[in-house]
Image (tube, rainbow, N blue to C red; front, side, top):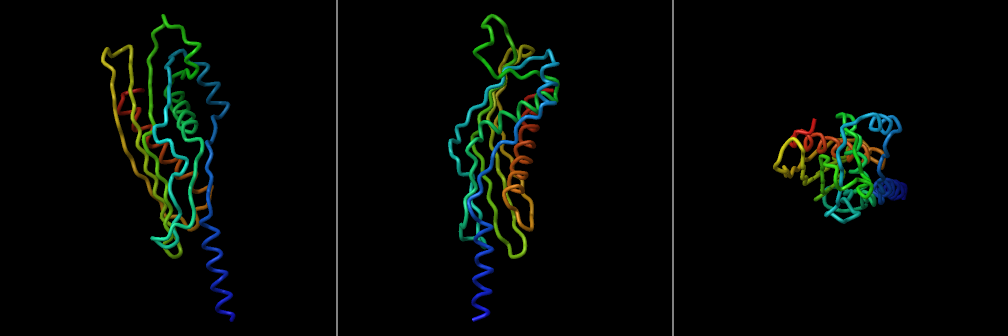
Length: 191
Protein backbone atom coordinates (compact mmCIF):
# COMPACT_ATOMS: atom_id res chain seq x y z
CA UNK A 1 0.00 0.00 0.00
CA UNK A 2 2.88 2.34 0.80
CA UNK A 3 4.45 1.73 -2.62
CA UNK A 4 1.13 2.47 -4.32
CA UNK A 5 0.75 5.80 -2.49
CA UNK A 6 4.34 6.75 -3.40
CA UNK A 7 3.63 5.88 -7.02
CA UNK A 8 0.55 8.13 -6.93
CA UNK A 9 2.65 10.94 -5.47
CA UNK A 10 5.31 10.59 -8.19
CA UNK A 11 2.65 10.45 -10.91
CA UNK A 12 0.91 13.53 -9.46
CA UNK A 13 4.21 15.47 -9.40
CA UNK A 14 4.98 14.53 -13.00
CA UNK A 15 1.51 15.45 -14.24
CA UNK A 16 1.41 18.72 -12.31
CA UNK A 17 4.70 19.74 -13.90
CA UNK A 18 3.06 19.24 -17.29
CA UNK A 19 -0.07 21.32 -16.83
CA UNK A 20 -0.94 24.04 -19.33
CA UNK A 21 1.62 26.85 -19.32
CA UNK A 22 0.50 30.26 -20.60
CA UNK A 23 3.39 32.48 -21.71
CA UNK A 24 3.23 36.28 -22.12
CA UNK A 25 5.33 38.95 -23.86
CA UNK A 26 8.13 40.41 -21.72
CA UNK A 27 7.41 44.07 -22.47
CA UNK A 28 9.77 46.84 -23.57
CA UNK A 29 11.98 48.44 -20.93
CA UNK A 30 11.53 52.21 -20.41
CA UNK A 31 15.25 52.70 -21.10
CA UNK A 32 14.81 51.17 -24.57
CA UNK A 33 11.88 53.49 -25.33
CA UNK A 34 13.93 56.51 -24.22
CA UNK A 35 16.85 55.36 -26.40
CA UNK A 36 14.54 54.94 -29.41
CA UNK A 37 13.12 58.44 -28.92
CA UNK A 38 16.64 59.89 -28.98
CA UNK A 39 17.46 58.43 -32.42
CA UNK A 40 16.74 60.18 -35.71
CA UNK A 41 17.16 57.03 -37.88
CA UNK A 42 13.54 56.06 -38.39
CA UNK A 43 12.22 52.75 -39.66
CA UNK A 44 8.62 51.65 -40.09
CA UNK A 45 8.04 48.32 -38.38
CA UNK A 46 5.09 46.07 -39.16
CA UNK A 47 4.58 42.61 -37.66
CA UNK A 48 2.05 40.03 -38.78
CA UNK A 49 1.27 36.55 -37.52
CA UNK A 50 0.33 34.02 -40.19
CA UNK A 51 0.89 31.25 -37.61
CA UNK A 52 -2.42 32.23 -35.92
CA UNK A 53 -2.34 29.57 -33.21
CA UNK A 54 -2.12 30.12 -29.46
CA UNK A 55 -0.74 26.63 -28.84
CA UNK A 56 3.02 26.37 -29.31
CA UNK A 57 3.36 22.70 -28.41
CA UNK A 58 3.12 20.22 -25.59
CA UNK A 59 4.95 19.03 -22.54
CA UNK A 60 5.43 15.30 -22.88
CA UNK A 61 5.46 12.78 -20.08
CA UNK A 62 8.17 10.40 -21.16
CA UNK A 63 8.61 10.97 -24.85
CA UNK A 64 5.27 9.88 -26.25
CA UNK A 65 2.47 11.01 -23.92
CA UNK A 66 1.35 14.66 -24.13
CA UNK A 67 0.48 15.74 -20.59
CA UNK A 68 0.28 19.52 -20.89
CA UNK A 69 0.05 22.32 -23.40
CA UNK A 70 2.26 25.38 -23.91
CA UNK A 71 0.27 28.43 -24.98
CA UNK A 72 1.09 32.03 -25.92
CA UNK A 73 -1.84 34.27 -26.76
CA UNK A 74 0.24 37.34 -27.65
CA UNK A 75 2.94 36.04 -30.02
CA UNK A 76 2.60 38.94 -32.46
CA UNK A 77 3.01 41.43 -29.61
CA UNK A 78 6.03 39.53 -28.25
CA UNK A 79 7.72 39.57 -31.67
CA UNK A 80 6.93 43.27 -32.11
CA UNK A 81 8.43 44.14 -28.72
CA UNK A 82 11.57 42.12 -29.39
CA UNK A 83 12.03 43.63 -32.86
CA UNK A 84 11.47 47.11 -31.42
CA UNK A 85 14.16 46.50 -28.80
CA UNK A 86 16.71 45.04 -31.24
CA UNK A 87 16.19 47.79 -33.83
CA UNK A 88 16.55 50.41 -31.09
CA UNK A 89 19.82 48.82 -29.93
CA UNK A 90 21.02 49.05 -33.54
CA UNK A 91 20.40 52.80 -33.54
CA UNK A 92 16.94 53.01 -35.08
CA UNK A 93 13.75 54.69 -33.98
CA UNK A 94 11.08 52.13 -34.88
CA UNK A 95 7.73 53.60 -35.87
CA UNK A 96 4.79 51.34 -35.27
CA UNK A 97 1.89 53.79 -35.65
CA UNK A 98 1.64 53.78 -39.44
CA UNK A 99 -1.45 55.98 -39.49
CA UNK A 100 0.57 58.96 -38.24
CA UNK A 101 3.28 58.56 -40.90
CA UNK A 102 2.77 61.13 -43.70
CA UNK A 103 2.57 59.58 -47.18
CA UNK A 104 5.02 62.05 -48.71
CA UNK A 105 7.86 61.05 -46.34
CA UNK A 106 9.95 58.06 -47.43
CA UNK A 107 11.25 55.90 -44.59
CA UNK A 108 12.85 52.43 -44.50
CA UNK A 109 10.21 49.76 -43.94
CA UNK A 110 10.56 46.34 -42.32
CA UNK A 111 7.70 43.86 -42.44
CA UNK A 112 8.13 40.65 -40.46
CA UNK A 113 5.74 37.72 -40.48
CA UNK A 114 5.75 35.08 -37.76
CA UNK A 115 5.30 32.00 -39.94
CA UNK A 116 5.75 29.29 -37.30
CA UNK A 117 6.70 28.82 -33.65
CA UNK A 118 7.03 25.59 -31.69
CA UNK A 119 7.99 25.04 -28.07
CA UNK A 120 8.03 21.49 -26.77
CA UNK A 121 9.29 19.91 -23.55
CA UNK A 122 10.18 16.22 -23.26
CA UNK A 123 10.60 14.44 -19.92
CA UNK A 124 13.78 12.37 -19.87
CA UNK A 125 13.78 10.83 -16.37
CA UNK A 126 15.58 13.41 -14.18
CA UNK A 127 15.82 16.15 -16.80
CA UNK A 128 13.74 17.63 -19.60
CA UNK A 129 14.70 18.63 -23.11
CA UNK A 130 13.03 21.83 -24.27
CA UNK A 131 13.04 22.50 -28.02
CA UNK A 132 12.07 25.81 -29.61
CA UNK A 133 11.70 26.36 -33.37
CA UNK A 134 10.99 29.70 -35.05
CA UNK A 135 10.33 30.60 -38.68
CA UNK A 136 10.25 34.26 -39.74
CA UNK A 137 9.62 35.85 -43.14
CA UNK A 138 10.67 39.43 -43.77
CA UNK A 139 10.53 42.13 -46.43
CA UNK A 140 12.86 45.10 -46.13
CA UNK A 141 12.41 48.17 -48.30
CA UNK A 142 15.37 50.48 -47.79
CA UNK A 143 15.97 53.94 -49.20
CA UNK A 144 19.63 53.00 -49.72
CA UNK A 145 18.71 50.02 -51.91
CA UNK A 146 16.17 50.40 -54.70
CA UNK A 147 15.22 46.72 -54.68
CA UNK A 148 13.26 45.34 -51.70
CA UNK A 149 14.93 42.41 -49.95
CA UNK A 150 12.96 39.36 -48.84
CA UNK A 151 14.31 36.72 -46.52
CA UNK A 152 12.92 33.63 -44.79
CA UNK A 153 14.77 32.06 -41.92
CA UNK A 154 14.20 29.12 -39.64
CA UNK A 155 16.05 28.40 -36.44
CA UNK A 156 15.99 25.81 -33.70
CA UNK A 157 17.23 26.04 -30.13
CA UNK A 158 17.20 23.46 -27.36
CA UNK A 159 18.30 23.15 -23.75
CA UNK A 160 18.25 20.52 -21.06
CA UNK A 161 16.65 21.70 -17.82
CA UNK A 162 15.94 19.85 -14.60
CA UNK A 163 12.41 21.19 -14.24
CA UNK A 164 11.41 23.72 -16.90
CA UNK A 165 8.30 25.34 -15.59
CA UNK A 166 6.69 28.47 -17.02
CA UNK A 167 9.60 30.86 -16.32
CA UNK A 168 12.18 28.55 -17.91
CA UNK A 169 9.93 27.87 -20.91
CA UNK A 170 9.49 31.63 -21.35
CA UNK A 171 13.26 32.17 -21.14
CA UNK A 172 13.96 29.51 -23.77
CA UNK A 173 11.32 30.95 -26.12
CA UNK A 174 12.79 34.44 -25.59
CA UNK A 175 16.31 33.18 -26.37
CA UNK A 176 15.03 31.51 -29.52
CA UNK A 177 13.16 34.62 -30.69
CA UNK A 178 16.10 36.91 -29.86
CA UNK A 179 18.56 34.75 -31.82
CA UNK A 180 16.16 34.51 -34.77
CA UNK A 181 15.62 38.27 -34.84
CA UNK A 182 19.36 39.03 -34.70
CA UNK A 183 20.04 36.56 -37.50
CA UNK A 184 17.18 37.97 -39.57
CA UNK A 185 18.36 41.57 -39.20
CA UNK A 186 21.94 40.58 -39.98
CA UNK A 187 20.87 38.74 -43.14
CA UNK A 188 18.87 41.80 -44.22
CA UNK A 189 21.96 43.95 -43.45
CA UNK A 190 20.06 46.17 -41.03
CA UNK A 191 22.82 47.56 -38.85
